[in-house]
Length: 128
Image (tube, rainbow, N blue to C red; front, side, top):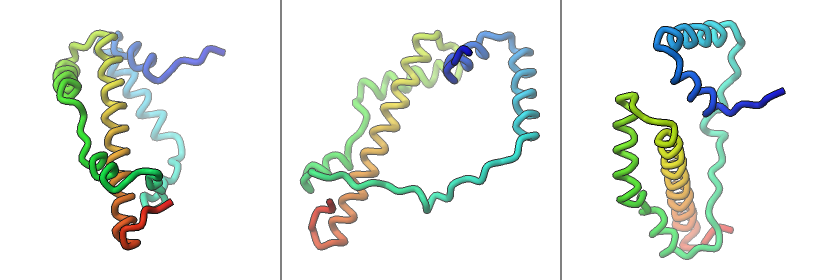
């Protein structure tokens, strides 16, 4: 059995003629409607782990982190090309990588902010 990644499936779907893409999307929607829905996990059950081994200054700096300006400009350009449906496969891979980095920065920022919040609640002591 051959295993194909989700990204490979999307790339193949993008190469289809527009009418075939519409037909594929309709078939996927029909299939999704016929399958029972799984219950979504409530947001209140998602656990955000605090960061450990960092000083208040380090956590504060991390909480204010941003994507590097060069990467941000590249991301904006790739997003615009994607909006125009003009990405080649290499650019699509680069966009996916940049978006993954943005997600990681966001998650680290959230964890740093959460850790700072816990520290303030405990009177300045760092959570373990």
